[in-house]
Length: 270
Picture 1: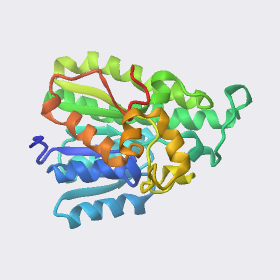
Picture 2 (picture 1 turned 60 degrees about the horizontal axis):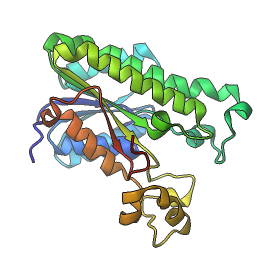
Picture 3 (picture 1 turned 45 degrees about the vertical axis):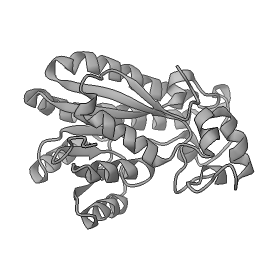
């Protein structure tokens, strides 16, 4: 199925690894010209190089999305080298254990306030900065797609992730508001919600991309909370998220806005 993304310019934040890398590669495979953003220049360039090696067009753009001036400069560079941004994917963000370096997080009452701002800055201000940098241009051109990656923690709550959940809930509320503001300009604003995702650098073995219910006892127990995950014998993988983003970025989703598409194996069904 042709998604009609050929020659569209897509900016993907946090594109240097995991879900972001899969999104970049998938959009490029659909013909989009991809701006690979990452805080680490080497990660951004590595993914951009993968795309170019496969025959696609990509620009590595290292920038801290918490820095509005840096985001504006990144968007200006993208427009100069590839063209106006048609698609923004707000993917940059980390789950609590990857931010703090520990598993078995405390409840909110015992949490360290020093960690709170890190979650809010990246997951809220990073998103706000990127949206603010592209919406004026999208409005002037009367077209655009904005997709933000959120978490089931922000949709239904998750113990020991209170501040992270608050930040992701803020992203959900912002998305609905922005969708109402920008709809008249033919700009779609949506979210894709994830639960636990297997990735290439996990802190626990059951989160490895090659982990299955057959080779990992802990994963088999975890999957009891994921109906289709239990049937498939695995958690969400980056490609699952990337496929959902590609759909939301396409005109196949032209009449979809202000919505949340959960890609979570059935973990939460609200």
